[in-house]
Amino acid sequence: MPSHLVAPSLLAADFTQLQSEIEMFNASSADWLHYDTMDGQFVPNLSLGLGMLKAVRKMTTKPIDAHLMIERPERHIEAFRDAGADQITVHQEACTHLHRVIQQIKATGAKAGVAINPATPVSSIFDVLEEVDIILIMSVNPGFGGQKFIYRAINKIEALKSEMMTRNLNPHIVVDGGVGLQNAQKILQAGANVLVAGSAVFKASDPSEAIRQLKDVGHEIAHWA
Ligand code: DX5
Ligand code: ZN
Image (cartoon, rainbow, N blue to C red; front, top):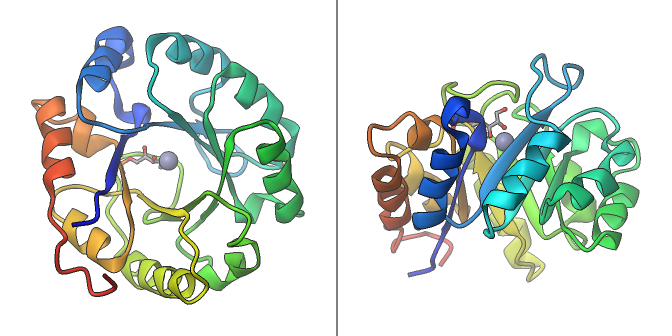
């Protein structure tokens, strides 16, 4: 069975208990900490910035997966790397020169990712597939946690996985937004290998158990395997 990764999204954590939330994450079977930065421009909301990232970096040794929902992210790539991001994902829609921004991320030593919104076709990133370590498919419109999964994302994952197999490429396929036990198996069967989960982890009565259950979701019958 191919193994998959689980990346809890810190956005849904209780910030009054940040240290214990991250201690829970550290002790759990979670793989990456997903870190959502919003600028109030690319998305309507504002969220986690660089100061918070520096603090979080001191509290975990697991990879920090920065998801930049910001316009013109090329202005801030080095700052996110310096603050502690191991992986930096930018939106296709936010970059005029996406290829260049990907090279900029890689030059910092971070893993480079590209994200697409629900209304953006997967074909829009086909010309950078060889360049990236991570592809993030948004399954909600970015900006807020706790939204409903947009089912069309499943078709997009399948189309992406199929293109990747044709070209013999293997970047991570990350799915973000409305992910939980109710749809995790379908997402993995479609070809994704990383589940981002905010509410499904941090709003659960037992977050580390929620992580364990997401890690245990089976996908033996993946059609692409
Ligand atoms: C949404 C963020 C997500 C969010 C997911 O814009 O990119 O990472 O935290 O939260 P849930 O899992 O609650 O949809
Ligand atoms: Zn995210």
